Image 1: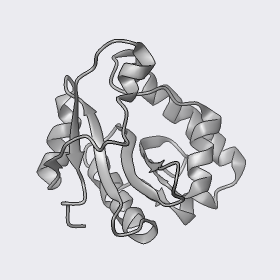
Image 2: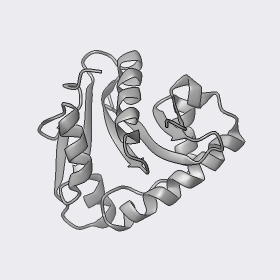
Image 3: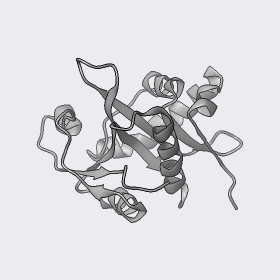
Image 4: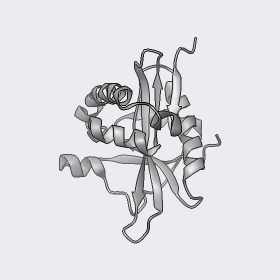
Length: 174
């Protein structure tokens, strides 16, 4: 039984600050093991609320606000331009089978609504974390070269070399 809602864009943006804080706190906790394993960049409650307010995130929650999954679309904006060059499907966590795919579908809707047609949409996956890659490739994602404007964030955060797989998500039909 589907006992959760997928909230993204304006739906998530319209939640009150207290609900956003409850949701963001859970997301930070769910991301910690992945940050510790070197798979993700650390997030904070205020930064996650900022993404919720921007309309560039998606969350799966139960009626009691238990977070079952989350993703944000991180915009890469060039220094000379106000339009994002691309969006990274990032900070993706899922606690329940099938929720990750629902988050992906809602993220694609948001991307196609807000992004300009030339913008990239991609995921950066730690090479030693095969599960997200498997899901994204099965959904229709394809390998792509790292866009020139995208740094290796985990390498920058840890100071050690880090192998990543870049997956083009614009190839997925929603």
